[in-house]
Length: 274
Image (cartoon, rainbow, N blue to C red; front, side, top):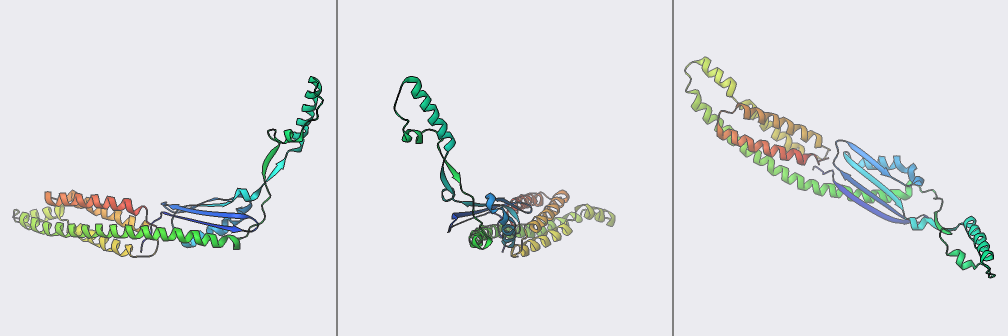
């Protein structure tokens, strides 16, 4: 069954002593598999392993993988001793200048701007074995959502294919009726052959019907068939254009416009199939 390229998955876990780890994976449509990573500097060594794991489950799409460590677990308060010393000396000088004999209060110094700051602690090494369970959980969610949307796309495309098949059969029956009536207007074989050469759309009808069968078959495939489906639709559009150009009947022309419109809508949908 086909799968969509749109999906989202998130997994969180608490890994001692690093704190809370959050992994988020998003995917949208793309011509190829394109993976973008947003990792803390301390976890950049995991990028290749993450890429290999994602590639096992996702074959096509623009994928963004974001891995974060909870900042509150990795920061500590730091006292700026140099700045507090400068504050102290400046305040003492000010006190002497205006004649205040009291000592500078330490609590006053601690509340001055810039004395305290939050500093990130050096990150400890976090290995693949600790991250992989989160990756599998998030990827599992992405794949399920892509599969669910794939079912919706499958059902809608299947209906459109069936409708195209019905319209094509009507065109075929109408063409036989029209050609049978029009051919009687020509007396010589040369005139008949010339007319059929310019007006016969039977070959295009057969090819379009064959493309419909191939498209239906690909819809049931579990492989990444989005590109193949798009190619088949391009060929279907080509045959429909030829039928429209060669048509000698207004009824057939109107029906081929409907077919071309449906094919265009299907091509838009197929852009989001893996």
